[in-house]
Length: 79
Length: 150
Image (cartoon, rainbow over all chains, first blue to last red; front, side, top):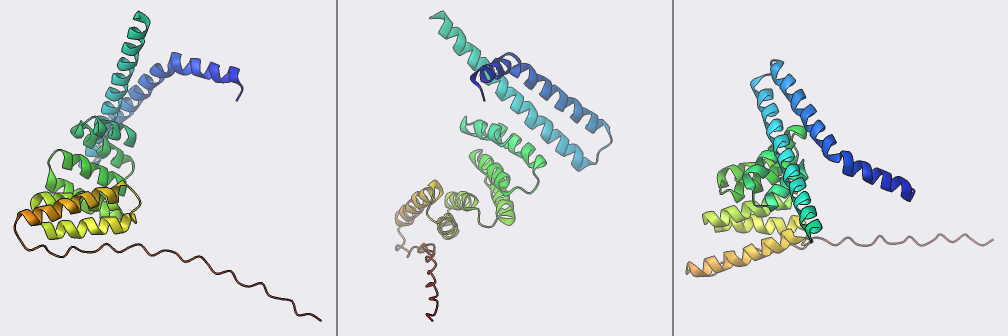
């Protein structure tokens, strides 16, 4: 891959990565809500709840990491 | 998803790690590694009976999984069932082929087990020996057939 292209992609990741993740999580939660409303068996309902919880924790972890990153950036620029 | 669980586990947030691994298991039902990971998260929370049940499931879906064996051995050790612990730890080393940190951990636990036996004042029991994995013999080269000279 050409260097120019790499930088373009990197800029995209930095600029839009967080938004993409947020929208991915939102879409997943919306899908799970739709599923839960669709009359599932007790076992399927439990699976849905487990997935929801796992995705919520994944989102929480990513948010923690992003907060950590911005705190690092702030302390770096304050020097 | 597994990586997220591992990060929580490494951060010492075992309850969260367990929940993430359980979610991953919904996505990959019957995955032996995930049963083992859930077992480890449960064990770290002190839920030994639930952890043992998970290791059982891990070994049912993948009988040659050494980490489930070594973890189950550790639980037996904590519960004072030294014979069962020894059996599991020796089996873990054999399954691992003495290749990774799993065998190292099993050996450390076996040493601890020997110390516990000594401390109990019992005559030192002969420890089970670890069978070395059979080395594969290099395939013999067939001698090239000589063409008969005419």
